[in-house]
Length: 464
Ligand code: AMP
Ligand code: ZN
Image (cartoon, rainbow, N blue to C red):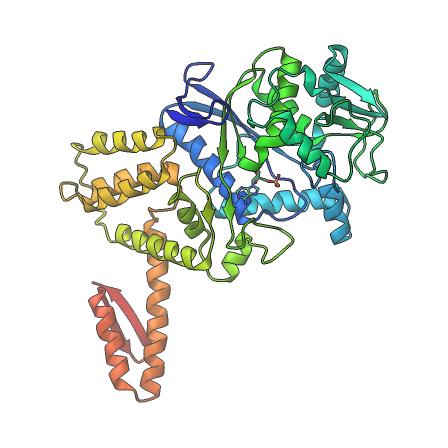
């Protein structure tokens, strides 16, 4: 498996710490609002990565957090508290908001065939873990207390800027632009591990700690939860590119300070989905959610197909036109597959060849568009029986998860509803004495292998 590693800025051979086992951590959603389809692009890429690794024979232990506390609008230590903002917007408590949007997130994931990671943990359920980590970092001199908050001292970190490639000067520019410079920090890039003397005095979520009543910073959640469930050596850490700095940079600093050694070898980041105006937003312009796409008549899996058509490291621009094109291609593909003859007749000669090609596409830094192309190659291959094609497509769909193979029952239901609509149209045509149209409908169905049977009770049909 080759993967692009943000840490080294190159495509590398993937070698996990334990042979055949991948310990994978992915940052979860901040549950203050619905996920937009940009967020979901990142989860689709992570889902394909997990399933792709499994296809290659790895056992994947994957953990994800749910951020229900500590995430400020700046991603750093400034701005508003996202959860409190969501609660205020809706006149609910942060707990109600967290529950509602966590459920909504997993509903969206279901619609997009994104598998739920085997471990999903809410950040607010692991306060003692963070307290333990922060206490040790204080004891070891990596952290300090100032004006009531606990800060991480980035000057103690080993190569703090390695992941982002930024330097302290880039950061100083950011700091000069920041209105709310925090005077309590030793270094402007230091970050909060535990808030007590925060500006959010009415914060609902607060816990006792050795440093007073307060709550954890966003970054410590991911270090805490991943360490607790995956141990001190992580193989892959994912997220969107916006997470590289400061979130993942700070996760590395804390985890390596706490464990005392290198923590995670591969950092894999998904590029953003942008709309035509640029950055996707939950507050400005059209808030693009899966439900909105459904309201507009799109199948959520057309969006998955749309995402898979481009590489996860390329910016993808969303437009309804592009989505419609993807939907047309996706539906056409499903139709071609539906027409394949299901009579069992498996020819094994080329199965290995195609499976190897599919593995190569996965191993090529997750080349999803090549994975899709292989489906078309299989369909075109005259040496394969229909049944063998179905076998291979079903196998590839374990990774692609596009519901490419429908159950016989599903197909029947779809045909049934289609024919019934046509019968209604024909009845109406007859009523209006438009016999030409009525006959045309009968002929059209006959061409599709459906014969209409008229009787005094009405019209039924049979499949030829
Ligand atoms: P959040 O709920 O804001 O914590 O973000 C959830 C995930 O979505 C994170 O992994 C982000 O990196 C990712 N993300 C945010 N915006 C986008 C976008 N426009 N396109 C793709 N991923 C995004
Ligand atoms: Zn995280």
